[in-house]
Length: 107
Image 1 (cartoon, rainbow, N blue to C red):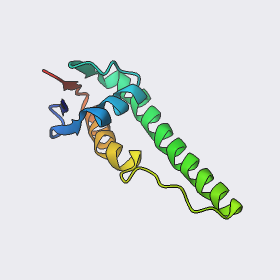
Image 2 (cartoon, one colour; image 1 turned 180 degrees about the vertical axis):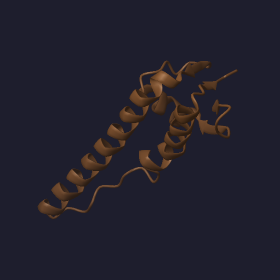
Image 3 (cartoon, helix red, strand yellow; image 1 turned 45 degrees about the horizontal axis):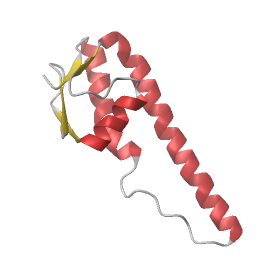
Image 4 (cartoon, rainbow, N blue to C red; image 1 turned 45 degrees about the vertical axis):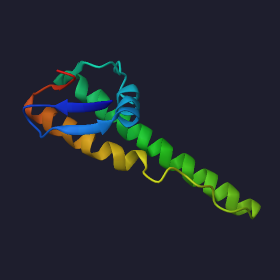
């Protein structure tokens, strides 16, 4: 399954199901086949995503530092970070917030 996020204020954004589901869960939305993010919900969604990105990066740095301190090889992380996956969505949310336009998927 794919998530295709649409808005009048930004170009369409397509995400694979696991990535789209994760982003929607982070911002507190039901990851069902259809949904909407209203402009008034966008500041909270942006903040949640930015916090999740910072947490992931902090956790990965802590694990790498811990492994280095123990003399172990650095742990392997997912090849594509949450930041890389979420930045296009964050950009879409910011554009839509400025324009007062909602983001929809599955319609």
